[in-house]
Image (cartoon, rainbow, N blue to C red):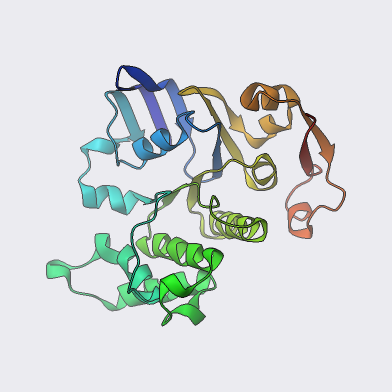
Length: 266
């Protein structure tokens, strides 16, 4: 469980993040929503340990996140930024292999368990067939799966992803979120991801953090998204919820309540 208290971040005289208290589960599919500039990426940078806030505390499972060494943090949290690092010249197996650096033995020696973790990550993300292919030669959706494989190989119990679907077409957006949801459900990894699409959140989230103007507008169970007042307050647009005409079988197998779809009415 993440527990944030008294968080403040100011840049150029402007408060970009102000959170009195926020608890984020580390065993659920948590999706962070909000307008551009609402503080989503700043929040992700803080809880990943990438950026220390100007004030406040970030606790992860009872430990001060910023009291941990870089390697200790990497063993607790795996982070994938929106702007991905360069992968030029790397084959996919080499890219996934980068996730093992926090676990390397004395003098950086590679062990059998490192190779096993890489194999398992490629298998889990359906990218084993691309192991010897150059990452830059893959489609956007395929390449994103390889990057997620790198997070899996890192073997951290929490995975944080900043807009993992932003550069993908609709089919691959759903494919990536379905993969993350399956990893969360079957492997017990906590997933915290920033997205923009309401319907992706309705489909996949179990927990929601809604950001607006650097503050938390609301947070809690994904059922909070099934309140049209909440959606209007978050997106400042008239939104109606309707019952999904053909809900996916994998959704109905896991949920009792019907799947809702958000429709913009302006």
